[in-house]
Image (tube, rainbow, N blue to C red; front, side, top):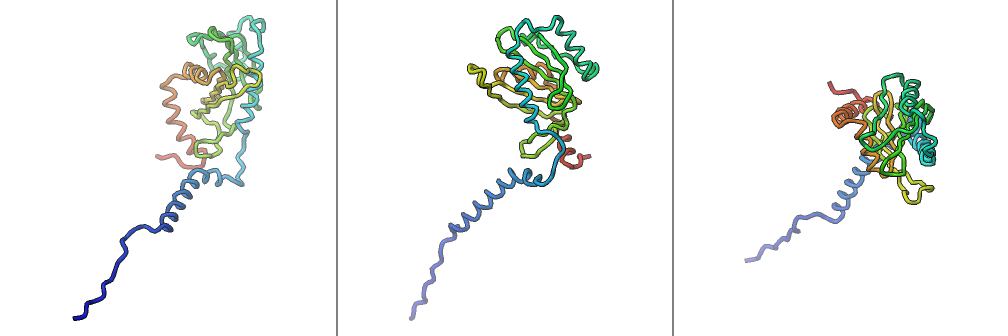
Length: 232
């Protein structure tokens, strides 16, 4: 009796080429998710000014605030602040009260920042020699920033930007906190040292419940800004 030839089957498994191909697809998908939105905007001009312009002018103003002395304080800073706010906004924007944060208003001025009529407020801290500076910037919607997906979007109500600035003239405080929060019709720009202090000031100005509401509203605003229709 003749034995039948035995056939040998290779165990099922993944080949190296298949594994490499799968890995390449995954890497490509991740890259497209990160860079796709920004690549899709190439060749499309969005009207507005980069937020970096505002950032640079804020740096210059904070340098002025740091070098200001107590003799530069206004005789009645509260009145000066109300007058400046009235000139820029009317009577709808309140003067930020930082008394509970240990800050005393020392000066106020109406000026133009990054092409926007604004109010400059300078506060002296009881616990630090470094000042707190607040800018109220009118109609900031044409200031453009990158969101977490890399899209160039306007500074619409509810948007929050957090950053740190380096100051060559302050060797003991190389980084200063910068927080920008867009409101309805204006933006609040806070500069303080360190960043955590700027966040504390932000939370004192904007109640927690308002922040929660604004985070919900900003989603609809972003959808509208990128040309998508709000869900009904």
